[in-house]
Length: 597
Image 1 (cartoon, one colour):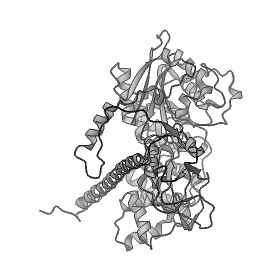
Image 2: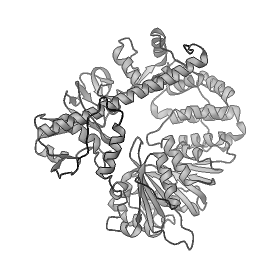
Image 3: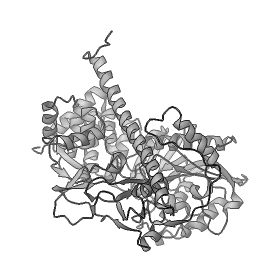
Image 4: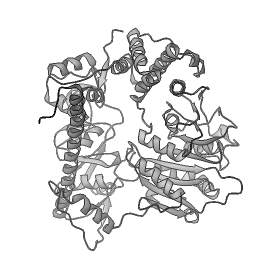
């Protein structure tokens, strides 16, 4: 293959044993850093040979393993949407060469042999040293599809679903990650995408399965496990799939709680899961937050509550996108209907602990609340945790702030707890825009074409600062950002721009008269109070802004900015410490560092 393998900025960070911010700094400060050869402004790709030459020329230590080279070759011969097909072909190669007796258990027609001899040789090299299962997991672990659960969340879902082991089904298993982490004795899956189904089957077979573990078909249309029951169903089904066969499934026995409306495909997956667990078995699904409160689904939510099937709805924090975990249980004959449902929020680990406390009858603490079913069966049957959980009291929150400030005063604002909180009038962003206090513009949905002209500000840039990392052609028709504008993104990221740029995808720019509305004050409000449904293109319009005199706004804006600067400094220090840990440990192991006694 003549094509030079390419790497992303994340790949470069891994090769150089540095954080992503370091790569951004290299690109900004070094004129000779390689230019992107493909990709987009927000996700550029660089020629691997050019990156290696630059790292050597600038004295940067790096390590490129056979597994690294195999992954880069796998990425280099086409568009990103081809990665599943190439991963499936790589898995077929490993099975054929190293475990041929299992190759016939993979669903669908076998892909053609690898056309890249060097990739095949690299895969065989890694498999010979680490085993075919480890070689394939290394490749699959590098490919993260949008919407895939993070590793910590997958582990939490498995912990809730199968605390004592048993059999498991994932009816929308994608690449099989959830089934692998369950460690189930009999793991079975179904996946509509034939390439993903092959990948999942190969991973499970290499992990020790000795039966055909995955069916390649859409589980709602063609249930490959009709009549089969498992100890648990665990899945992250596709969200907002408006193509699901609504009319064709009328009268289907799986929908015992009602045929979901066309706009509620997730409730079809909920009932599919309940139909495939034994009495007493659990269903754990990751679903979009809107499923808990959309009006068209309220009748089925009410039926799930009345039947005692729905046991918990827990908002998962620290995920790349908003998500709720739904925990359901298929009632056993004669079981009394449970009187309470758990609502909660927390990190993936805290989510599992919260469920375990609730299930065992222990107090769930501040992160959760067990509410009577009768209180939930109102007109809306709104099961969104954010609407059911009590907010922290000012006294509780104040004590926590005092703990966090203690001993860490450098750069942090002086904050004190107010004895009596006064009511303050407020207005939404949309209302302020109608009054002419500010204007709001949203970026186009399409990503700008890469070029060497104007700097592009991306969602990722808001996480660490407002230094643009992308470039587009100067002639591109895009929304311009000026210094002093507030740039916001879903999930409550917002900063005041300090340099001109072009607005990247999924961002909004807020422009105001600073004598009426302080930019740092507005940015702090957006960071601290993300609007319901903030993942939509209308992000921020429902956020409410207190109507305060400009002097008070500026004082609050300075405090908001000081908190943000402290968080940025802590993040940079953590990246430096992580790099020191990796490189220092490597040096002590390899002998180019030693203690200076």
